[in-house]
Image (cartoon, rainbow over all chains, first blue to last red; front, side, top):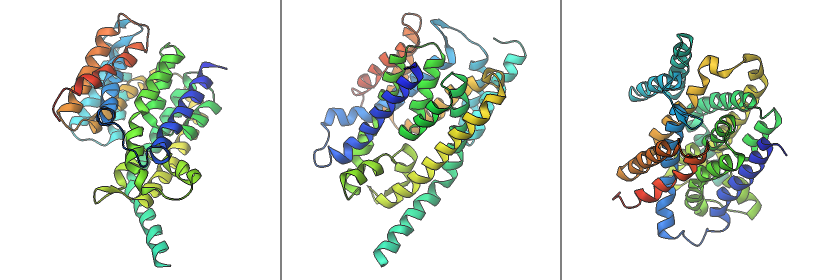
Length: 104
Length: 223
């Protein structure tokens, strides 16, 4: 099995189970309090980790390249309350421009 | 039957409320299809992924980690951790779902961040709005993925278009929607710092997985 199919199968099965667990298993039993408090914190934590690693990491090296310029543009658009598609377009266009101008 | 007409009305209301977000979801689906194909996932795997997982941030995380040379195990763990929040979402929608186990299983899959947000009414979840919004988003996400997978191959290297900067920009936008107080802000800052500090030390993808400890640290912060 290729790594792509392995990931699709494992993540797909896990996600179906995670989404169904509440309505099928925990319907009458609430989650333990500490666990319930942790759940809403997982996504912001992981999303922030993804932002920095995909902006700055190149393998094990930390680099400032065209991606950082693009993400900075996306962040500026976010601060201006631009719609999501504008945020993404700003990131892509600025990164492509920076790359065309010679940034790695 | 008035009750039935009412239910259909709420389903349509959910579908209408989520329509603007569905346009963005279709565009996201297309960029997911393009990037997945470019990362070497082929055509069928990304389509099956969007059918079974229906959770954009986790799917993007898998593609970007596999594309970045990360091990498949780290991609799987990161995606599952990203989706664990749906455990809490599932618990919150549980009282709203009715009928057989099979039906509740199917309907529970329609809960994503946006359909869940649209389904909130008077402090509880409205089942019909959840299903109406979820179906529209699901169609947009899967249709977008198919468009991207089939059209994307003709476009060449996504780096030429700056699409690789769209990943982190997307995660940043999703993050902005999740940060709503000191606790979530602390979780985000801790996750970012841990990932940054561990990047030179661990194989690609692993810093993301370890960064989840930041969420536990944030539990010590007052809401």
